[in-house]
Image 1 (tube, helix red, strand yellow):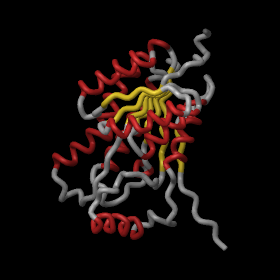
Image 2 (image 1 turned 180 degrees about the vertical axis):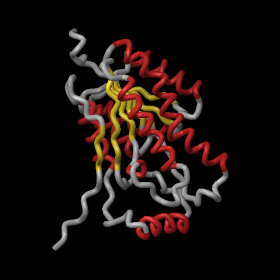
Image 3 (image 1 turned 90 degrees about the horizontal axis):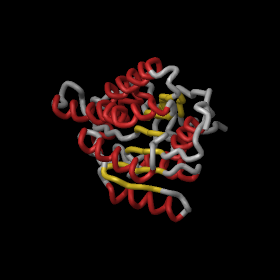
Image 4 (image 1 turned 30 degrees about the horizontal axis):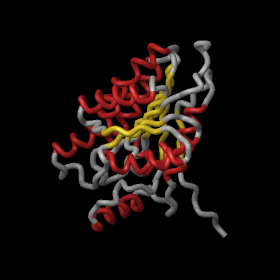
Length: 257
C-alpha cells in the first residue's frame, strides 16, 4: 500500500458514544464501513448502540471509558486496538455542561468540567495520535461547539473548555503538518441531545432566556445528532491530500411565509 493511500479497513473510536452525537456518529461510521469502538462510562447504553451496528452487519467493540482517568484511557486504547487493529480514526466527542453563574460555581466543579471537555481530549490524543504519526496517516476529529467562537452565558466552564479545545486543535494542525495525520474540528450549533436534560427547569429557563437576551437564539430550530454525525463522516471520508480542517454545522431557520 502506498503511503499516500488509505487502507480499506479503517477502525474508528468514538467517545461519548452512549447517546446523542456520539451514538449517531458510531452508527453513521459503521454504516460507512468502519469497524467502530464505542467508549463511554454508560457501557450498557454503548452496548445497545453496538447491537444495532452488529444487527446491520457492522463490526463494533465496546469498552468502558472515563476520559477524566488516564488509566481508563490507556486501558481503553489497548483493548480497542486488540479488538479492531490499529485505530485509523478517533472522534473526540465526550463532554458535559451544567448551568451556573461563573462566579458562583465552585472551582472544583469548574475544574471537573474543564478536565472532561479539554484535558480528556488531550488524554485521548496521547493514547492514539503517536501511533497515527508512526503510520503516517490518521484522522482525529474534535467535536467542539459554537460557544468556542461566541460564548453563551450561564454555561459555566463549557465555553472555556471548548475555546481551549479549538486552540489545541489549531496548534496540532500546525505541529502535525506533513505527518499524514489530519486534525479536524466539527463545530455544531444548538443540537438536541441528552446534554442538559438533567438540568433543573428553572436553571434551564435562565440559560435559554440569556441566549435570547444576548441575541444567541435567533430562531427555535435545533439540529438532530445525525446532522453532526454526517458532517463527521464527511470529514473522515475526505481522500488523502484533502483536509477539511473546520466544519461548522448550524440549524437552518424555519422557512418564512
